[in-house]
Image (cartoon, rainbow, N blue to C red):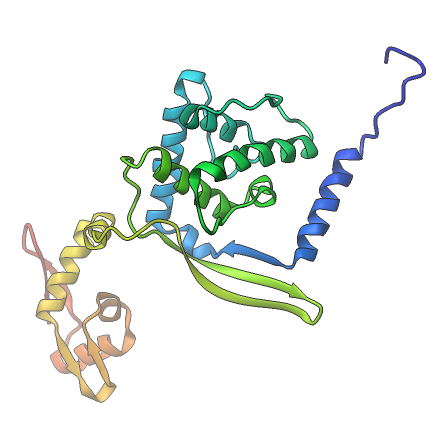
Length: 261
């Protein structure tokens, strides 16, 4: 190193900063996590991987910025700063690459302050610490608000909801609660969207089975209308076997599938 009298940088400085921030967040006492089952929702996947990711990359194509993950690539403020400049014409005097945690947080604070002025959200569901910690829920809320404000013509999947676990730490212990978090508004076309995400053959089999096997199983106290119950319920299968003398089979009649007793 040039300059023999120079003080050597502490290699653990950044780690100490991160530990301090995590401790402060924990003491704050509240955090939200998306339940694993909600992460598998096709509508959430479409919102995250197709619409929002595609919107970012299309918006920043001229600047040769490519984002691969909304979870991993927005935490340092660089992409958000470029989006702010692109849609709001705001160019802040900030370092392009913030390498330390403290520099990234300072950059995020400046960028989010300007974004919040323009998004005009009464109850913001994101904050600097959450974006910096790569919190998916907060990041999705922020991006949805940005798309709605800056490019409302972009069609977001309707009525995207997730189940979240809310953990709250207090002196008496940890309390948890499960809540539904709405990410996009209901446009009233849910039926069509749900239909588009289902397998066509599954829909066909379900409709025909419901029409042809609407059985009232009084001794089992069960109304058989749901496809999953018809196919997978042992009780229903045993009932069909007792009444017909043979297990139900599926006959392929060409373009349709029919269930025969």
